[in-house]
Length: 415
Ligand SMILES: Cc1cc2nc3c(=O)[nH]c(=O)nc-3n(C[C@H](O)[C@H](O)[C@H](O)COP(=O)(O)OP(=O)(O)OC[C@H]3O[C@@H](n4cnc5c(N)ncnc54)[C@H](O)[C@@H]3O)c2cc1C
Image 1 (cartoon, rainbow, N blue to C red):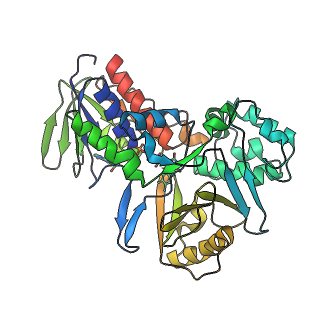
Image 2 (image 1 turned 30 degrees about the horizontal axis):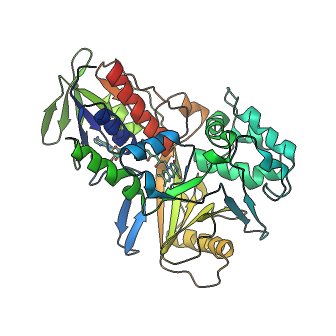
Image 3 (image 1 turned 180 degrees about the horizontal axis):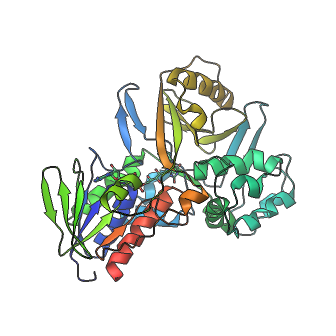
């Protein structure tokens, strides 16, 4: 594929955009075909009519150790678009007991912070943290609960909330080795790799709009409202993309398929993909609040899990939210508001609110689904796969999506 000049990317989520940017940097011309009305997939911002303001499609938290994402942002000229504290800080509140604590790793690789009671989780001992070393070496299909739950404070007050957020899967089913990879690339590399980062303005302003502009400036294009309905195939290659209103010939080019797993399975006969998904519920309150030192607070002991304070809006995330998915929005909002009041120390009435349930937010990070994640290579020589659901070794995250796109691009450029 080294001689290929034009590459078609199917899907303008972060995997597709990262592939498109990498291919563009390598001198190829790229056309991205996106089924939806806008680029960004699950990682985008939009105007919500009910709230009357722009919101993100769910809160997205990054860590400075997400190196592929940081490189992608630098390539599209958006490195300065993230915000966050200068030091690694993770404030927590237990809304049942009212207890508050802040986990504050030191910046360097030697984790002396675990020796300081004021920097670690209350009620934990130094030796509790040493168990994390075995987490990063795990190989089998042990779940998060099996690997980490000793009934102690470290699990309840830090590891379980982090695991559920990172895997979007209940700890009883979540695959510990996927969490181990996240921990190896962040906490184990020292606080410098754990600086929490969120978009200064919005997801689209950081991750999407600059990428679309970068592609356009280099002769590429993102075409929205362009759903690929089938791939025409010869013996060992894709020859054309079919759309409802016509066909695009790709005989001399290459294709990155960066659509969600069910779509990929429809387009490529016999492709094994993850089939189980987990929901995320986000609740957005139209209000102004003090962002505190980190801009977010982790919540235990209630229904809310992470409360993000942004200009004019407070947004709450609940991952692996099977227990909320079938409740009416009003009931969810009322429950979460109680936690927000405690977390932010407020006593006012509930402001305008919007509850967004994303039932298939990410694939379930279980052993069974992990076994179904395909690599980037397909039996078709000019087709590579990308997406957070491919075999990245990471759970479904921005970092995984970006890496998958770069890997797919690399495969096409080198094969
Ligand atoms: C609510 C929520 C909160 C999250 N929080 C975090 C977080 O805090 N940190 C983090 O790192 N990650 C988080 N994630 C995960 C992150 O958003 C995803 O991992 C990432 O956005 C996935 O990108 P992707 O390109 O693989 O897939 P997608 O974003 O799903 O992109 C696939 C694209 O393909 C398009 N498409 C589908 N079918 C076709 C077709 N036939 N033709 C053309 N295009 C098609 C879709 O419209 C879509 O734009 C969160 C996800 C959600 C939903």
